[in-house]
Length: 201
Image (cartoon, rainbow, N blue to C red; front, top):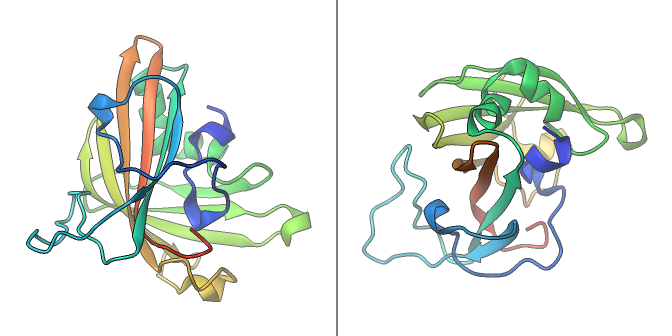
C-alpha cells in the first residue's frame, strides 16, 4: 500500500485543500470519489458521553471531526492487514519521506500498539512515538483506538514535549472503517474525533 494513501492525518501535519464542512459520512452511505472532510460537530445537550469503543461523540463546542476517505485497489483483507501486521505498518506509517523503525502491534481489544515515525534529516531526524490503545475491533469492518504521544517505552507524554504544537490534543479517539466495494477494491475511512477548532486543525 502506498504510504500517501494509508497515512491518516495524525499530528495534523497535513490537511487537504478544499475540505468541506459537513457531518462525517456513514461508511455504508459513502459513494463516488474519495473525499476529505472537516466535519463540524455540535454537542447534544441530553446525549450520553462517549462510551469506550463507540466513536459517536458529544464533543465540546468548537470542535471538529477530521474525516479522510480513500478507495484502494486492494481487497479488504489486505487493507486490514496493513493496519494490524507489524511488517506492513512499518512500510507506510508516517508522512512521505519519514520511515517507521518500530511497529509493535498488539492488535486486540484493550491491547496497545507502539509505533514510531522517524523524520528525515532535513526535518531533524528525530523519532516520534505513539501508542494506539484499541477499544473496539470488528474484523474486516472497523476498529476504534485512542491515539497518544509517548516515549520509546510507550509511556504517554505531552505533545509539546515532543516539539509539537500545544494545539494538538494529548489524546484523540480514532475510528478506521473498511468497506468492501468489490473483490479488489476497498473504501477506507479514517476519522479523528474532537479536534479543537484552531489553526492547527
